[in-house]
Length: 328
Ligand SMILES: NC(=O)c1ccc[n+]([C@@H]2O[C@H](COP(=O)([O-])OP(=O)(O)OC[C@H]3O[C@@H](n4cnc5c(N)ncnc54)[C@H](O)[C@@H]3O)[C@@H](O)[C@H]2O)c1
Image (cartoon, rainbow, N blue to C red; front, side):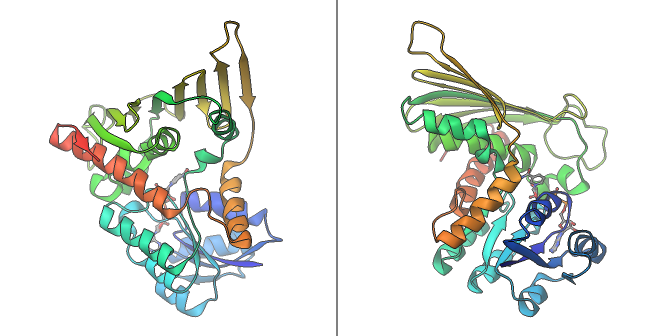
């Protein structure tokens, strides 16, 4: 039975606690840490009937409780040395994206998990979608991927830290990183990125310093190209994450990670496949982590993937700031 601790008991931590609750034969939540004690206490009460210990300082949690896995769901600006401490203690790590706001911290996290040989999983849950996995399998026989087009549209004020660019990194870094990560996953390593971004819709909102419209072009080492458009000014209550992929012999259109229309295009006749699934992608990323620990194999999204996708979005943000393409 894995003993699990949490650092950060906010919105997304609920998805992970729910997933772990459904795996109570394999994992037990034993400690919750949040700088706001009430939040940690609420998690303990709600998910363990008050049995799990409550902390406001993760160092104290690591010192006082025997933990096998830690779930880190901190706002991007709040990452300090929690990964280093956990890895040194041999504790496996689940960490939400973006794993940091600078490459020095991100690279340190990669070194810490690799040196101490602990498993790590970064919260790019879209990679676990049925449509994404089907496409991955099909692409063994088709390719190369020449073009990807990603769109992310929402309209929400989010939390105060999200609206503050110094704390979240901006919409591209904090949120659209999911789309950039999928593109990297299918197209390999990027060589150049050019981004434009602006705050057009939220100028009157005090302390709203992140962009709400952005457009990015990415060039890949194999000559492939991707574009990503994003906004926080679209339809309230709707979160649209459309991704299209064109490979030699295959075109796919994905309204989300569990749905796709896939066309095999090397035939003269139309050959179409529809994927529609209700797979729980948050549960799937946790199951993969537990399996990886038990089987002593790599997870599907180890820390290095978090660092590489972070480098891409940080380069996009820098490109927008400097108004010129950035080479990676
Ligand atoms: N994968 C996804 O679908 C998804 C969705 C939402 C958020 N996220 C990511 O998860 C992370 C958290 O986002 P959220 O929406 O849950 O934020 P949130 O603000 O709801 O929760 C963050 C929690 O961390 C706590 N906290 C801050 N500093 C701390 C510290 N030093 N020690 C302990 N606790 C501390 C806060 O008090 C808060 O309770 C972000 O990186 C975000 O990008 C991922």
